Image (cartoon, rainbow over all chains, first blue to last red; front, top):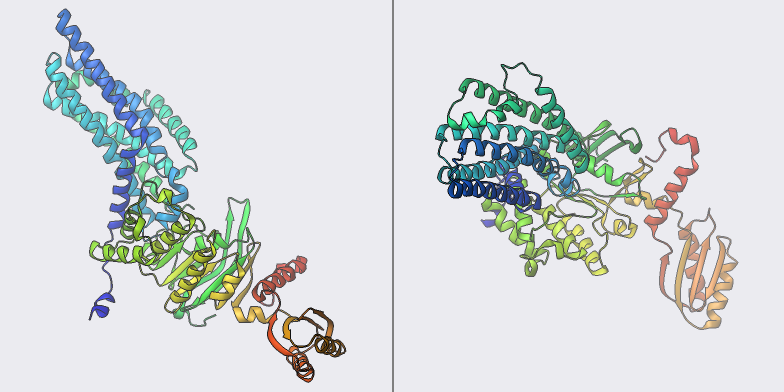
Length: 257
Length: 333
């Protein structure tokens, strides 16, 4: 009877390979020194900056605007994070090329599932970490500095930065799926990001470019923002991310590994 | 090898791979492999063996031609087909920080195996490949033999119908190599195997079919016996027992036989070189009669040289000697 039971056809779980790659990549990212360096740097910078401003407020009595300082902090976190995220994402697929092909892609997984697993894992890890750190910074600022922050404004500011970082992460994973080496991937990604940032400056004033969105962070944090404009900005960022991911997906599903 | 397409496990047609317009790795390979075959893939370094196997499992895309596995076209996204294939690469590499248990669990999940199937199966495989003692240790510290055994377990976790093993005995000590060959023989009873190897004696021992690649082109594909049959069997060694004078006398008589071009007696070992056109059975019958007449006992007789190796070398040499005529398919292919 047991032998007969063993011969029953196995019901394969179609999404298990995707989930396996997702989980494995999250674990791998959390263990990587680049990720740990990024978290450590962000925490140290935030703690140092907040304590410094709290000291000025507490000792000298100069009122420190939380919205102003948090927006500055977020701006620099975005700039520095973009650099580190480039390194973190541009190697997501290229760094594994030897082992990946042999250990992973020769099994029952499609290229689509592999790419999506990697992309979603990096998005979840990096954005999750950013949102967590951002929330902690905002809560700290609420208690340490002058409380001119609005809760809904803080949420919108964090989401605005998150969609920007999401676009960077997507570009990184896509470049990683296309490039042959990590170093080349990082170089290409940086060139693309710098070129895109430069070109987007020339957008008509009524459109929100990434730079303009970051410049408006102090007002957004105070709760003074144009929700439609920000929604349009977020929509464009998500659309660019999806198109970029589709390009990476299509290319990766046809390339040799 | 099979005429009916439905019986075929692997079928390729004019399979060609050119890397970035720089290197022709595989050229016009057409092959049909039916269920139950154990095919040895032979070829020197750079002959295209690994490229062929990687095309078969969809890691590479063909520049021209196609490969079908289980009657369906193999593509990079053909996950359903790969669920029925077990693959071992030449030098298996493993993700960092994993143990045999976590690695096999990961592999099983990549095949989409649900928990109630994969957990018992990976436990059985770890026990079967004798890694139970180190099942919780990091793979990074494993020896070649241990990683080879883990790679075997990973290739069997999905209970595949087709096994594609690229140089499975590479870097193994004699004991591990022997175990690997015995495993292949056991698996061959119910699965189809493609085994690539430099070691021709391994192929000789476990395979019933052979394909020979030379500079990316398939110069032979068929039964291993047919490949060996191409070799001229003209060199034999006989270990004898008897009086030294009787041995010398027998050797002298054999030297006079027209079927032999050279006969050497070294101590109690007789070396026989047949003429190219001699019929070996008739010649050896005469030898046995002569030995019997001189009261010499035969201890053992063997055909000198690995037959498969000799046949392989003959084939490659013949292919090289065809010069520009290689433009046309060789008669044997």
